Length: 272
Image (cartoon, rainbow, N blue to C red):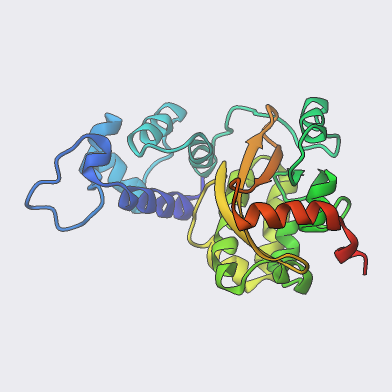
């Protein structure tokens, strides 16, 4: 049981919720914007004293059932619930294992897409790309993890994204790694290595965000077509360790025209 991390995660998730998010009235006497400890305890059907001790790093280890109750009270996602179980010293229900072998069904989807797409694992290794994905992102199958390229300051990786968005990417990457952390020794060793080698990663990791986004908007500073803004959809395979990342542009926009041009240009801009 990691008492410090457990307490930190509980406090941050509690502060992120408003009373109306869980069906409670704010009331005139509230001095903080988030939920109170007694609110969480009541929603989780446990004593306020027990929950308070967890946040104060002095509680006994909660059972798996108690962790599940706290997760429901804090409206945690499935990924956040599993992370909470790990912090409390429990093993989350298995949801798959990482492998270099791409799920055939996922590859069939990739093969049929006419827009940039790639398959990555939960540690950021590129497992497969279609031609448009290579033209947009560069050829990365067999490369080191995008997380490592990013946090170790790879100039080519950083150049693909506007500098104004760098901090946002750092937070997204760290939050995604939180989902993978604890699945196995490989993931823990990967994160521990980044913590030792990257001060930036250590900074954003300390904020304890846990999220694997399934959709977002991304801006890319492409070397040939210039700034392009795309929708990014992320589909997770059944084994939970393979992710299909798909980029699309709104029809009729300048971004769509740039994406069409990229299909003609191909990968020549990355040849060097």
